[in-house]
Image 1 (cartoon, helix red, strand yellow):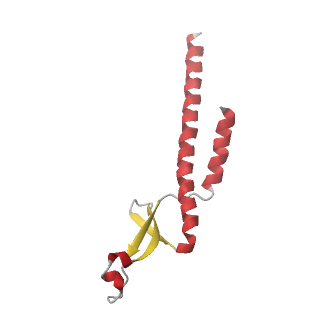
Image 2: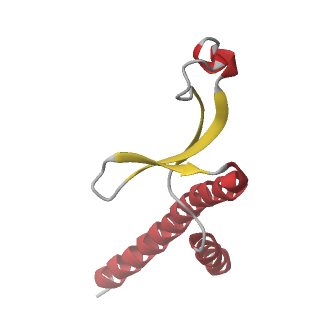
Length: 113
């Protein structure tokens, strides 16, 4: 258990270095040129444009435009956040098991007095 917990903690440290919370969305947009075909035909809208959607510290939903060249990096960062979360849950489960074992030992020690 200690070895797997240590490995999970090392993984948390690696992921935390570049993990970004949020969701990536792709949108197709109409431009501001009224004569452009994107206004007449939805299939000819411009995009895909990638945005990182997240909540700011005040809890308001907001977004960040991700330039096309940086989309792979943003996907890795959001994926790392998911892995960070999953790894944190796994560490929490191990911590809960360890706490349960400590509490039982204390209870058994108190009962043996």
